[in-house]
Length: 256
Image 1 (cartoon, rainbow, N blue to C red):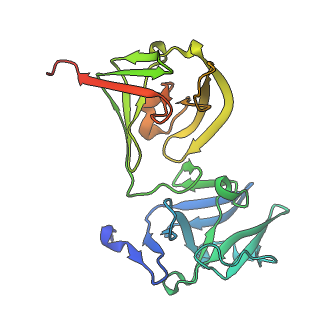
Image 2 (tube, helix red, strand yellow):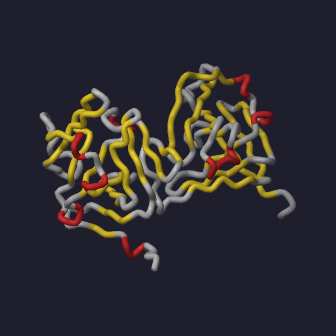
């Protein structure tokens, strides 16, 4: 008989660490070497941290590659006291892993993620999909919905985008973002930059900066050339930071 997890599996330790079991198959690699291979990981939210990380039973980890850390950063990661250096593929990664002080998580080892610290593993996978930056929060939704709303974007008084076919991206805890077809954007008024950012829910974004002399923050516009499958509808579309430009959203066509 299968066992199904529910929201009631979310637990909190006396130290304020929130955690829950996961049914995902998670693997972590350093080069071609698999360091973690677990079908029973737990997701952990440390106090004050908005995003989770994974912890794994010691038997699901190549513990033979771990060495007690020479310079442990005690006081970090919920006042953890035991840290490990990882020696893999001839490379020593200092403080790459640790154990939490919570009794509930005894026997589990957590790892730094490469995107966070530069001390973590090279690649992480959930099932057969590579994941980036940090594990995806199962309690967070990201929905990309095509719309017929009239959306205009102004920068320093100039209309730089005007469309009736945006894709609205709703992400838990964040402002709605309006993704606009390139044909409806005055990209000639912007300069493509070398800036890039990564998101575990959407992928890797490229950016543009405003060409004018106005007091506009750099890189106010971005796009995902190859977004994650869940938000494929935003592929190639341009979005703008609501905080950096003026966005006017009208009514849906056909309604009063």
